[in-house]
Length: 242
Length: 113
Picture (cartoon, rainbow over the protein chains, first blue to last red):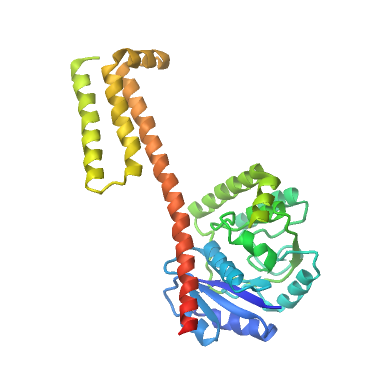
């Protein structure tokens, strides 16, 4: 069984080497690919020195597109399990074996690490927390599953989901609650597991600034509405065609 | 419609038509983007020359014929903007796919060397 860890990275020269080292320590069989989103620091050098494959975007395209590049790499190279985690050290690789074990239980296609399923030390700004609760609530209502952390980028994914993830249905702007609803409509099974996450060491966020936050709310509402309107039949049919 | 207004709108229609035609001829504008502009210019000619049609539309909208022309012009411009946005969205997807392909191929080539 071939396993791949995909790590999207933008200007992570201070963190990427330790993230890679920790993953290798946890699971030596896990192959690692770093998707460098046109960093202007030494991210590429650090990643290559750590002995992993680096995919370079010719220009910066954002987090969602970076992870989709990772999915495309995994699909092309026929990996069975894909572990997706951030390059800023937020995600502790110690949960990977447990997540893979749950995935291999065959009842789940996507395992998501949640900061909020159990009380942890993780601190989130109040506005962001409200957004997470709101969109998590909507996702839970639609999927009939408890979704507590729709923004989590710590996921383990089965190979059968890959064709769907590389399609144009994948929301490259902010893969979030809308993405989980799409997965549900495409008949993939999602499961959240509680975990501790650390504050981002690089202090970067996709949702920084008022304009970006407002756009995020608008985009998420629109995307969820469109997903619901497209409905289960269309998305399922599309997923089946891939 | 007063003569001055007629001359003004005829001039606009002529300028649009000649400008778009020349831009397409010089390959500075693709044919695909020209059709809506030429349609606008052609419609303007029709509406000015067929004044009764313009009056009917104006009566329906309850405004003066000149305002109707400006109003229709704004709608036409909105359609043009929409066409550009549609095109831009399609291009953004193509650029994204292309950039991802470059990243994957670059890795493949490096692996072969």
